Every structure is written in structure tokens, then in C-alpha cells.
Image (tube, rainbow, N blue to C red; front, side, top):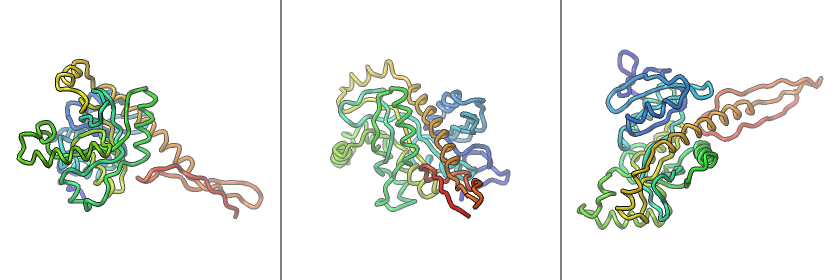
Length: 296
């Protein structure tokens, strides 16, 4: 249960219950919140406290929000906990990451289906044997958005780590050999991107019975030299991943609406007349609704 202040706001985010809807995009960088929110209908600033900046708006008439998490898993866990406490149940990480597979280019998108728990925060929620898995509905919505926008992308596993410089300058670390061995294993297993939040976001969501996913733009890859990676940044833009994430959220909202409409019971009276029963907001598990017919 999140900590609420006497004024009714959650301790870290400075938001009250009802301030956000169920859908929240989560960039790490607070400077990207307004950039993302400007894609919403009727965007408006709500709160800024510590590393957490929140804007809200609507997409196709549905309330949505964007909240920054800061860098790393501990602050991401706080954001997810407190957003859930005030009404959110669907979290989508949006940001940058390092490409991990040969052939990946700066600007490629990574739709995250699961994450390597190479961090410490998630172990305070569930044992390490529990997998950090994204919600399937979120994954499919982000993948389909990338397909529809014809953006280069891959769907796969991210490595979530605690140390930025342990990745970019591993050779100067006293544990360099271990870092190199583990990195080789992650790449060999097919991990597509390296970032710092997804594993904890997925694990926290699992404990809250909420939905979570992620879509990142990759910067550099193992097949690029340092000079090539630097040169690729000259034309780098964050816009494609933001536009794809917002489009994916529209798809998810539409599919959730369709699932609610489909999730009813057709009750058929003996005289042949019918009536609908059921419907309502779907839970965090996602999946399609179903129609059942019964006689009375």
C-alpha cells in the first residue's frame, strides 16, 4: 500500500487518487514527459516532485498519463506502486536502450517481451526464479504499432541492469571478467537491448496484478564501432519510439474496449427474446473477451 500524505497525495509523486487514468507511459527522463504528452488530446501538466513529472490527457476519449521514473529500478518501482495506488493498472516503459544483437542499428526499436533481472530491486518483491515477463496484450499492441508504422524493430528480451558504466566501461571495473562473461551469455541467449528499468517494472506489475510492457529505441550495437555509433547519433531522434508507443497505446485502448463489449452473456428466454449480462472493466491479465449463450 502506497504512503499517502495528509493532503491525500502519494508520498513521492505528489498526486491524488483519480489524478491519472488506468494507462500510463513511463519515460525515465522528466524532460521527455511533455514531449510525449503533446501527442495526447488536451494535454496538461499535473505535478512535479523529485524526479517524477506527470502530465495527463486523453486518447480517443480515454484518460491517459505520462510520468517520468528517473533512471533505474528503485525509482521505477516507486512510480509503479504509487501510480497503481491512485488508479493506474497499465504501465508502458518508453525510452532509450543499447542494442545487443549484431545487425541492430541506432534507431531500431525494441519491443520488450521479458527482462533479465540483472538488478537488485525486483528481488525485494519476488524470488529471482520468478520471470520478469511483459503483459502479452501490451507486447502485441506495441509490436503491431511498429509494424503499422513500418519502423525497424525486434521483439525480445531486455537486460535490466543497475550500473550504466558497468556496461559502457566494463574493462575498468574490478569485476570486468564477470561482466564480460555475463554479457556474452545475455547476447548468446538472444537478448536484444540493455536498459535499466523493465525487469523491476514487470515484477512490480506482477505483484500488483497490473499490466506492463516496454518499447525502447536502441542506440548503437555490438556490430558498430565506437566511431560508427557516434556518427549514427547525428541523425538520431526520439520521435519514432514516442510516436510508436502512443500509437500502440491507442491500439491497446481499442482492443480493451472491444474485449469489454465482447465479454457478456447472452441470456435467451424461453420465448426467444435475449438480453445481455456482464461486461465491465477487464482486469490486468488482458486477453480477448468471450460471449456465452445460455437458456433460462
